[in-house]
Structures are given as structure tokens and as C-alpha cells.
Image (cartoon, rainbow, N blue to C red; front, side, top):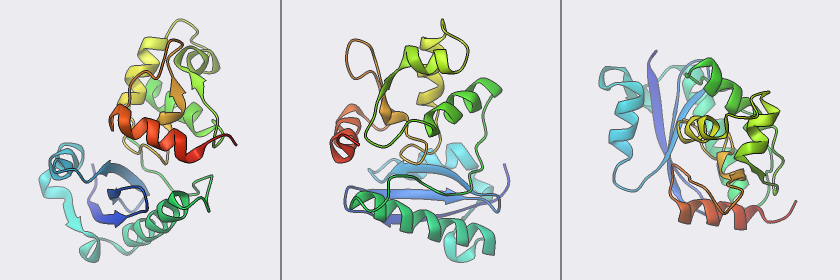
Length: 170
């Protein structure tokens, strides 16, 4: 991976760590004591810098992401308009593309997401791809639920419930 710059962002709903490359936002996680390890696992230790030391493009992506996440947290933004630099398999990227099409305040099932990908029998693989989504919230994997309940969420089910409640019906 190319060099990542990162910044912590305090929103109304959580403190988040956001990372970006010159191409776009590449990583987002909650600041809960394990964020540094997750960032290193994603970007690698030799490729990290604080936002102030990052490339001008990475700094611009981080500033825009911070502003949009804060606006989302207070109900002023429903759609993220950010350049993204997502790394994953072709299947994962296809799953993440479908996630970006789920409107604010709506949910679909893992089975429906698989159908939208043209892989109707791949709901478990879809769940796995969603769990590897490097930019939750921005690519809204929290909007996918199991047919029998909430399903999973890389940030924890309590955060999934909170995000869904914050979004409420569209």
C-alpha cells in the first residue's frame, strides 16, 4: 500500500480514526484503544504519518472526510462524497459497491445484497466481504442485516444499532 496519513476525528457519535492516501480515504475505525493496531495492520508501520506530515492530497481527503463525518453525525449529511482508495478482492469491491447504493435510513438483507451482485447464493460471502470493509459508515455496511436479526458488524453490534437508530427511516 502507498503511504497513509491519518487523523482522529471527534464526531457527535464517536471518536474515529480516518486514514487516506493521495488517492482517497482508505481506512476508518473507532478510537477504542485498538485503533493504532488496526491502522498498522491495514497500512503497515513504515507507511504511516500524521495528517500534518502527509501528502497534500491525503490531507485534503482527510479534511473532507472529517467534515462529512461530523455533518453525518448531526444529521446534515446523508451521502458521502469522498474519493476512496479501497483495496480488496474483486468480490469484496463488488460487495462494497452495492453497499454504497443503499440509501440513508434503509436496510437490506445479506441475501438481497448477494442478489444485487448477481450472486444469489453468496450471502455468507457477502457478510464476510462486508466485515472486511475498510471504511464503515462511509461505505455503509451497517445498513445490511440478517433475515433473522441484525447480523454482524465489524464495529460491534451496539454501534450498528446506534448508527441505524441515528439514521432512522429515510
